[in-house]
Image (cartoon, rainbow, N blue to C red; front, side):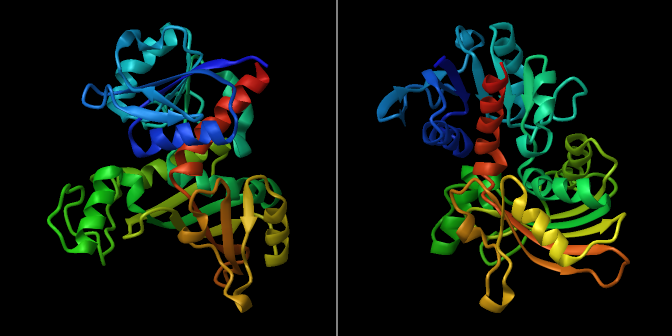
Length: 330
């Protein structure tokens, strides 16, 4: 079996650590792991395959000999250092927003558009976490019934905003002084309809991401309107999704399609209080869907509830799945 040298940029962050965990769990053929981070984190140790590996300072020359570079350190870092990785011969799989809407950069969810991976010119973009879990469910439904319009409201955990956000929630719940302040208002016992920056039209960047990324990934003119909300949950994003189809469908047809869809687990038995919840999605790679019901206000519409671990499928696992597909097709 061919082995690969793999770099993880942002190795000490929430997603970077999870990337290394997923690489290990899925037995990705790693020859040499190169954990990279800022100067502040350089010298720390991470565990991989039972061994301690020292974190190195991220520099332009950090990618010598690297085959695959998983980036999760923010758009600014990706824009500065991804070109150095590509120049050194690595394929970059980037978890930031830096390249997602670049025409020459594939934006990939393997269950949806695996074929796009092989169009890369050195960089493959990992989509936004809330987009990933939604399109895994939308894809089989669009192929069968055609999707005209999607209305989505998200309930996104604090892990999606990083370690500072987790610290703020934990400190607020415990009633102790804040170690970090990520949000403009308290997040404990509260909901913030504000993820990323606001634009002049009143939408946030997160909401526009979901709209534009869905079209690009699905390679279809699917209209999406979104409201994204931060909630006091430590892990797992939830979404209420209303879908208007072009063709008639029944609840049983939708449920049957999703039961066969790759990467999807249907949890839909209201009589037994069975429905997806963030707690049950923790540290799992699948996308969970339930509360499947007819929208009685339009001729062909369905309401769904979708939940997934945003750090795994919404970030780390999706990136590793891209890497797996990349080496399988090489």
